[in-house]
Image 1: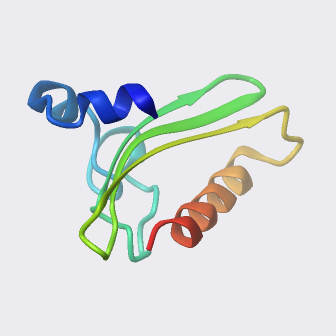
Image 2: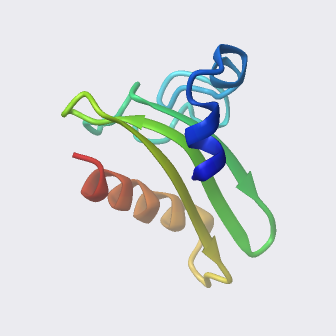
Length: 93
């Protein structure tokens, strides 16, 4: 998150991140939640790791840098993503 904090004002970097519920690999992520359209996130997925990193605009008008990684989960990827969505919505006001 330290690197994300340093890059928060870099327009080219921020523009390279897809907007949740709107574009890219996060077009379906956070859809129908209060955070839809308010998260710029990069995803990463391998056989046993799922990760999200980027920025989320809270309802308190604060921009949060976030990194969330799930390692070695036995759950299906769709269930992992739903659980990650729940975590984002619980953690970001």
